[in-house]
Image (cartoon, rainbow, N blue to C red; front, side, top):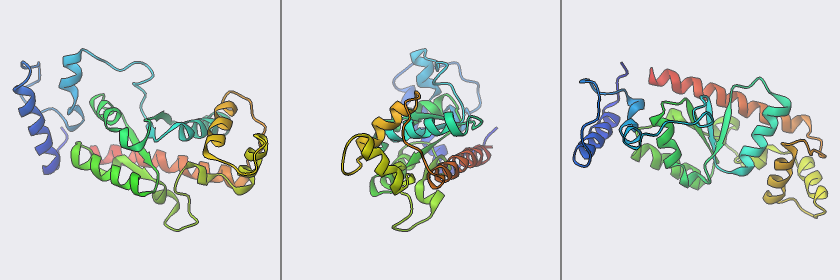
Length: 223
């Protein structure tokens, strides 16, 4: 069985104490459940199980639609062998419900966060409030290093030439995040007109490989 760090074991104990005051006993064995079953009593109570989409392992929770479209586009057309499944969480500050469900379903996952103040604060908050460790998070600085010119969000993986092409595609003078999102949502289903250069593809490949390694490190940390 897995052994919990003291602070995470306390969270589990607190959860079960609160549960016992609000719902009848559930059919748990006499020993404490493993760390990853922290939310299982709630799921049992709701009689809910993951769908075929939700149940996928090797999940990468991403902040928004652009992350989802770009990374799925890269996997579909340039790295179909990647064992990664991407799920948008509608902003890094709104990820707690999805994280809780992934924990309850004992899925292998990491949360990819932008390297900004909001992303860093969210990672700390989730570690304080949920039974989750630092191994469950990846931010862009982990992959590309710290520095003003280093990528800090998904759009930073695109070269300036690619961004200019996307702006031209929409008849605009300057590129915008909404243009990037619209372009890759169309490109994901084959409506591609912009040629991505080697620099951009290499950046995406580096991120994807780091995410695979991060999921493996999380598995090792829980075993």
